[in-house]
Amino acid sequence: MVNKTQQGRLILASKSPRRRYLLTQAGLKFDVLPSGFDESSVPFNDPADYVRTLSRAKAADIAHGHPDSWVIGADTIVIIDGHMLGKPKGRDAARAMLSRLSGQTHQVFTGYTLCCAEADKWFTDVARTDVTFKVLSADEIEWYIHTDEPFDKAGAYAIQGLGTFLVKAVNGSYTNVVGLPVCEVIELLIREGVVQIART
Image (tube, rainbow, N blue to C red):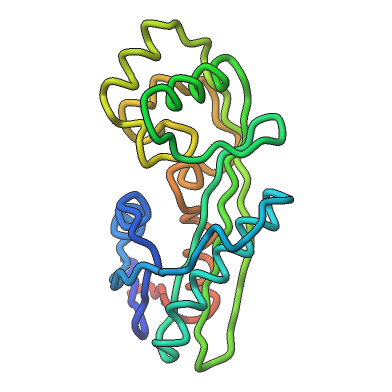
């Protein structure tokens, strides 16, 4: 039998219910303290650099107030043809995004940072996943945007929800598309001794 134990306090610096769900499913115990970092203060250039910078800034925002805790910061974006798709502000925007993604392959980038300020340990990396959509009919797009699921989601879809029917193929981490590359984050937590796995 394998036991997994956790050492010290873990904080998720995000209000994302999807990230909270993923970490809970992984069996972690953590507090949620969303970062108040102003994302608009970081200019968009290279997708990987952008999410890396944001994840570190969000983690630092919380870590400096809780220096003895381990903090997870993350930021996820959707990129197609070099352009970033944010969260749609209405049905027209969601319709336009889904029409653009229809039948195409896009990229999902998540920057993630794990840090403990007191120990002066900072780890930041980026996960990339290629996602291919099926060709969507106008009726499918209209039905989906009227479920209200596309809103508050980068790229106007939720792969873990009703939007699963939109996706034809995923090349890379599935959980990255949901909002956090869980495999990589757990590996970091184990490597740093925050999570310990022992056979009994």
